[in-house]
Image: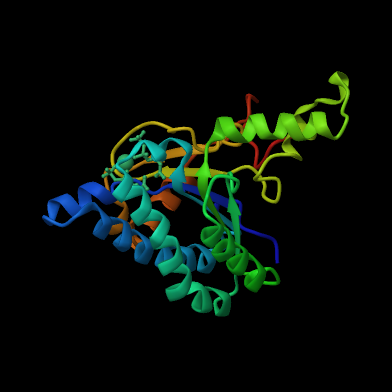
Length: 239
Ligand code: IPE
Ligand code: IPE
Ligand code: MG
C-alpha cells in the first residue's frame, strides 16, 4: 500500500515542560519526568496507528548534566524504571527501540538497560522509536567526523551522504516533522544536521499533557504545509 504523503514518515519530539508540569501541581520535578514517560508510551502507539514509521524523542541532552545532581540521577534511575515497566509492552506492541547518544559517559547499569531494550525489540517493524539520551546535535556531527577519519576517508570523500552514514540517526530518514512542547521556541541542540528541512511545530502544551488530540493537531498542521525543499513548485519529497 502506498503511504499517504500527508502523514510524516519521521516525527521528532523535544519532550519539554515536565518540570513546569510538576511545579503547577506542587510536586517535585521528578514526578513530571515520570508522567512524561507515561505520555510517551501513549504517543508511540498513536504515532504507529497513524502510519508514522519513525519517532525520535529527546530524553536527555548533552547539556542536561548541568542540572542538579539529584535531578540527573533521578532521570538516570527513571530509565531503569521505564524499561522495567514498559519494555515488555512495547515489545509486544511491535516497537523497535534504538538509543542514540553518547553511551561512553553513562553508567554500566544504564548501558545494560539500553542493550536489553534494543536486543529484545530488534526484530519489530511497526514503528522505530529512537530515544536520544546523552545526545547533542553537535556531539553527533563531531563523532561522525571522527568515525569518517578513523575509517580513512579522504577530504574529497567527506560528502553529505558519507557523513550522514556515520551519524547516530543513520538508521532513519531525516525527520519530516519536528515538534517541541513546553512553549520554548528553540532547537536546544537536538538533531541539528537532520532537521535541515523538517517542518517545525511548537506548542505550549507541557509534555506530560501531550496526548492524542495534541498529536493530531500537530499532524494536521503538518498536512497543511507546503514543502518545497528549495524549489519553486511544491513537491512530495527531497529531489
Ligand atoms: C524536559 O522537561 C525533560 C528533560 C529535559 C529531561 P524539563 O525538565 O526541561 O521541564 P521544564 O522545561 O523545566 O518545565
Ligand atoms: C531540551 O529541553 C532537552 C530535552 C527535552 C531532553 P531543555 O529543557 O533541556 O532545554 P532548554 O535548556 O530549555 O533549552
Ligand atoms: Mg525544559
